Length: 320
Image (cartoon, rainbow, N blue to C red; front, side, top):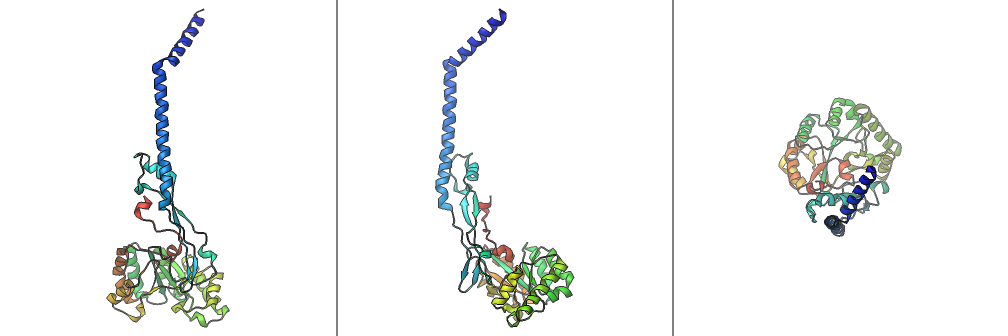
């Protein structure tokens, strides 16, 4: 009997609570508030989606240029709606500075093109590369490495195979400093005058000695003095090496004054520039100021691989 009375009382209490006008008003208010918040969220997401199109940048395909041969592709940009919403959610309103971007690759890559020499990076990429060809000039290498380290700059050193064999310690020092190592032939010949077997031997022997001494497998080949023919590029490609040239020359072998060398480079430097230099007294004396002036033009300095990659150079705001 007592149990029956208790159950009846509980049922009556529940009925009163559910049918209480104050409870009904409270529940209805919660529903309205939830719908309002959801509606506001959906509205913000919709606004981001609509405005995102204004900030998108189309990817640029790799292509063949009649003058500059192979030009690498460059990633486009697309707004990441979900991540952008997360950053704007607290404020509850659209804020261009809080847009989050993701990179979109092009449809045609450098690897899709037939083997061709590469003289420079993509013209929209605010980056330059130092191509430092090494077959002599040991007395200036340590100073150049110290300057690069001071500025936290990595360069691409193209080493002659014979030089690596005779200077294994210096070759290791360059690699251990984090710089990129490239192939610069074995005996520094005019590659244009060699037969296919001789071209193959020059490239193959250099790759072997570089890997044996530094543990590095090269990705790029720089023909001595810039002499090459189609067979050179094709044989290098068979060794999985891209052939690189340059678009700005220090002409440091002429022993210019530091002021003249810097003026020469800064007068021609551009987005995607590949700057040719050697371990000479002129370059060693110029390097500190050269790096400073290049950075002052809002150009980053990276390796050949950095330069020729499709990765965009992102502004600080876009990274945050």
